[in-house]
Length: 377
Image (tube, rainbow, N blue to C red; front, side, top):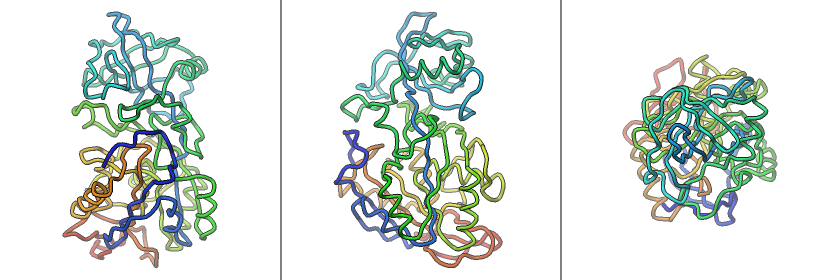
């Protein structure tokens, strides 16, 4: 696979690799996505807009230039002073791969950072020299204005031109709470949503503060994903319950949707409306209680996104997916090609909530919550 080097959300030549519930792989044009949706399905997307979360400035105690990338928060929309987890870099910009960026100056609690028009104080160093907690020393209104005027979208070296903030907003973007684009949603536009509904399926949204995907530092990347707040509307929770009763599939548009729904179900036994903070790290050991299918980007091994795919596919199938994507020159990252994984065929569901467990022996193992998961799909 090769990185997508242009910020085009819906290129006409975008590809879609499809893995069905038997592990069979096919290749389609990405515009064919609605054809994979069946009557009774519920498609759920993340409607978070992306913040201009990259801030350049100065570490005032040393006078050294820094870049601070906002990476996480515990609340979707702060009402008092805004506090964030952030990743810091020394001088340089996106044209240098993050793994080659110099380290920032050593931080101490109480250090003040001048980030354009904004001042922020280091509240804590979070177990790694690059990872800090900061609090902006302004009102919420002043902080938002400063971010809008001075911030830039987080960007990586594989893109050749600077990103504009609207390059990172999906067509359904609403509240600005994501730190990187929930880019699986680039597959959507209003015609696609209309086509989904025309097939007898429903469409709903959640809001999830999508965090950063990479820092270039293996020790920090091992901590990803960070805790991420989310909001599930009551209407979406109700549609999930209705879809389950009617044996339809829950199809997540993006890994952030998977994380929010599975975190909510792990806490409550089912998806309830309201706010939460996703602490669940979805992996091969995570039983899927809610999501039956996923559309996402093409992810590289050794990333947190790829690890999440192991909740859907065993390693044998996942390696075949990677080999096929490499052989056919699929593109990775936000503006790359897509992957559709179905772990359950449409059809009658058993009583109780549906649980898919870790894959075994080349087959995916699923079963009802009230029985041992011994059915094969």
